[in-house]
Image 1 (cartoon, one colour):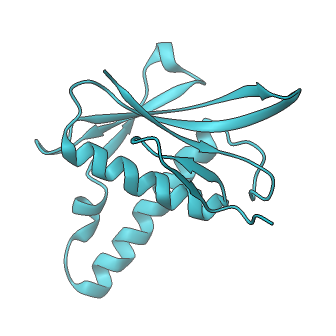
Image 2: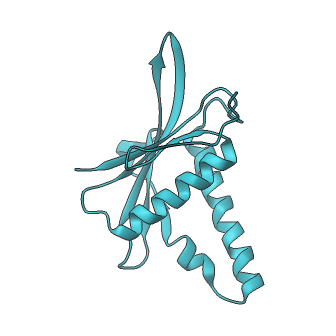
Amino acid sequence: MAQSAYIKFVTGSTVAALTLDELKERLLHYREQLSQTAKQLGWEYDEAGFPYTIETKPEGEGKWFYLKGINPLYKYIVIGVGNEQIQEKEQHYVQVVLPDDATHGDKSKGNEFCKYLSKLLKAELHLFNGRIMYFNPRK
């Protein structure tokens, strides 16, 4: 059965919602940061740190895209955006899905990407295992 993690935009988050294009930009920025780290270390770390290509399919246009692994340790991760009604208020989220045949490497990278995005956006992260991490300012 597929597993999902959610990055929920709550009160105190830096954005109220995110589009797919903005999400892709954030992931490309993450990859750029890895390449800068690789230059500093003198090691091609960006390939190991982000071992995926960003792919889209016509049926997922505007709803989701997927990260396709570039080596056998990684297969793919599906990422989409959505919203839900909570007490007459609309809450937007990013959903990260590990398909049934995803590898342990995919799950590790999925957690890594979710934590990075949640910290960056000060969002509430619901992990694959059901635990919740709060990166938003709470009082």
